[in-house]
Length: 242
Picture 1 (tube, helix red, strand yellow):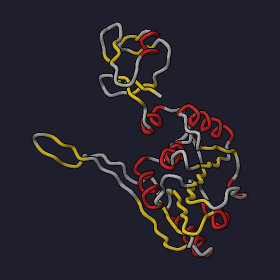
Picture 2: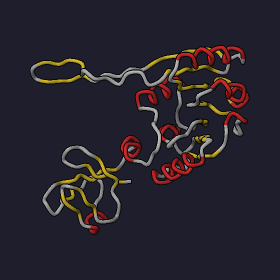
Picture 3: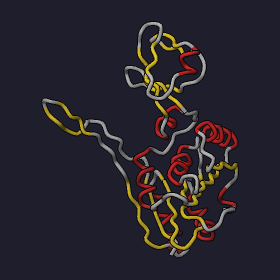
Picture 4: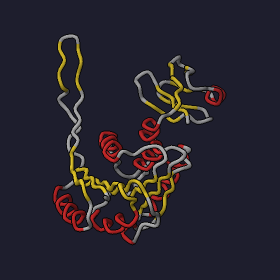
């Protein structure tokens, strides 16, 4: 997939059709022939760079009707679980499919991601998003994961659900020895209940973290943290099936 980036850094999905913005239009012929690395000019002389979309570019632009888990939290999830090439992963609470796409991008062609979503409308959006990005190792299913997990011997189970503890027993049965369960929850009360249930079913190495992100503003007259930061989004809990 290709994207266009304008002079301000704003991104657009590149399609094989005439392209219109307030900077002018680019012809259909130029759009069809534009390759990553090319610069396309509008009829007003403004330049757009053609880039090959990476996973972050695509998620920024893809269709969605719900919030998504931010990259700061995705990074913690993948690092703490040791997710890697060839892993088999379960994702629940698909939403628009952003987390499933991140996981699919990490586990590669040898890996597999199965994502459970209870809402039909979200399921259809997520399926389109996965198909449009071209990942063949991500499968979206419209199914309530609290009724059971079909897959067995999986490496990681990630839950973005209001009541993640309802899935812990199923996760215990589906995870391989040494596999991880990871959850995202916005409220500490959810974490407290979850810890009790995880202990009940024999999970080990319980750990809950929060990731707050603040950029640094670098200027010639002085460098300091930016006033605004990406603060609390959710608590991330991890446990291992040992």
